[in-house]
Image 1 (cartoon, rainbow, N blue to C red):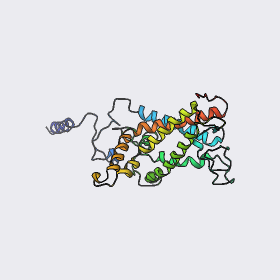
Image 2: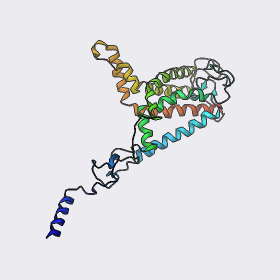
Image 3: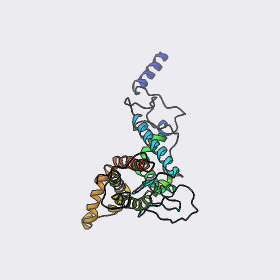
Image 4: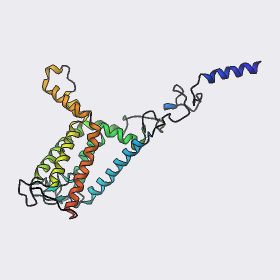
Length: 291
């Protein structure tokens, strides 16, 4: 009888347990495996291809990292009048290619012997690295933290952005202040593309249109930043007393809703812009002129 009672009791406990669950054990001490969380044996219950999105994200970001690293260290084929690569603008070293009317700002003298791109890329790179969307993208794509919604991350503990180096993500607002002047300089470079190879104004080439599309996307991505939205409309108790800032806040808010799309579009456009300059400067492609 005792055996039957024990068997009946165990069956009653099992009946109330979710399929695929297991009773808490002493080893379940952290994260989603804590004894207070649901004891599900499966790593996740998703049946879709949840891994596809982080894999594509990682592949896209890795491709840009490889390409931009090659171009930044190549120190060649970045200027073909009147086009200058956005990776090399402004040119702050003495070893820059002479650019008539271009962003030649020799602030560091001749002691800098490496590629001048390394002096300027740190600013847009810092802005994108600390961007709220890009954090989500590379946290999921490279670190699986977490890899997807409802999929447990493989790490035993999580300290968030409270320790070095991730605590540096808090400089995003200051990186935004640095990204705005860079976008302004790229706007100046875009204006200069409406010249021909002899620096005569009033000409439009294919490169002019590529630069124009790129700078529109750069500004759209920069202004759609969460920090920009907070700077414009944050800490306001009464929007009615600040109608101009409220209107700007609404415009930035609409851009902010497309921040992910603009982040990818501007990343692709800046790489395409640089690659076009590379093709023209290396002689692999002649820039067609419309007039």
